[in-house]
Length: 332
Ligand code: NAP
Ligand code: G4F
Image (cartoon, rainbow, N blue to C red; front, side, top):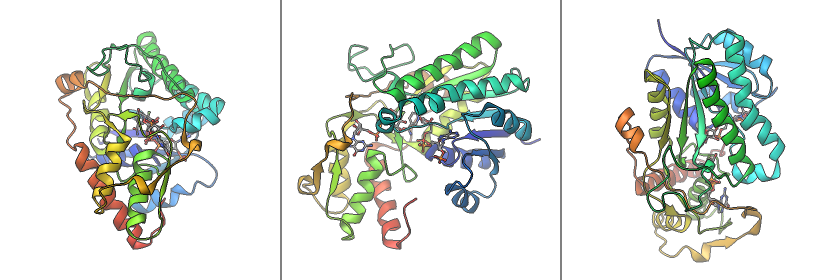
């Protein structure tokens, strides 16, 4: 019998990569789509016709119960969230409801269908929970034992989701694991995130479709990996005999300026400064200055290791956007 997986956030970056991975592994893949006319549904049906779509919403627990009854999954991957940090400052309550309490709704739905002993659960936790304050293993990278100090409504909501997942593991014996993932990017990254915003703008500048890019703070450092590598880690966590929490990261950190250096070099521009304007609209009320992860536990216990390095990541994103923009296809 093929294993069955239910993915929330199927229309997002990670949902796309994870659905492909599970399909390759022979899983029956179910994906939750929200909204009465979600424009991303058509793309999903076209690109990943193997996904069985279920309409539900993380804020509506009864819809999650029905989704579980329909899919009868062996594994649930909870990737759905308001995931943009800047947006979370503007919509903190919605972020708490979806990103925080949405996780509780799914865990309660698992209990409601009696799935505590049969369903394995993955929670998409985040390095944003650490907050980037360097009082904690300075220079070594955050690991599973590092202190949390979230710096945004998103980070706070994710920390609630993280702890409620651990609590349900301890209280009800659910095989529930949290992947504390550092930033991961790629050709499916939303254009509202800084790496994709840059790769897309660089492609458009090369093709004469735009003459500059407006960005916020260029100083923060991020531990950027490739999303395709990270979904493999999610899957590995649910294949372990015992549930646990794991950091997935590259162990390297780079500034946005370094990303700009490499991206503009791809189109033959050495000095990007004339093409970049500062726009305070993209600044945040509180910033996470530096994120650096220590993936030793995932490497040792799961045998996970990222494959795509930073220069290759930038290269693949710019190459993809050059092709996309040249084709005249609309960015979705
Ligand atoms: P993403 O591209 O922003 O996707 C978010 C997904 O959540 C979308 O499919 C979205 O659906 C869905 N969603 C939003 N509100 C929902 C609701 N009320 N009910 C059900 N689904 C809802 O995010 P991602 O980059 O793939 O990340 C996946 C998960 O990992 C997220 O939880 C994110 O917070 C977390 N994470 C990401 C990273 C990273 O670097 N990418 C790092 C650490 C953790 P629509 O398409 O309909 O909006
Ligand atoms: O690309 P970002 O929006 O990603 P951020 O805030 O690090 O969050 C992402 O990674 C987290 C994992 O650490 C995930 F949990 C979260 O869901 C999301 O996927 O911003 C990166 C940095 C920030 O310091 C931001 O202030 O880039 C800076 N930045 C500068 N100009 C900008 C911009 N960010 C965005 N989105 N847009 C700008 O114009």
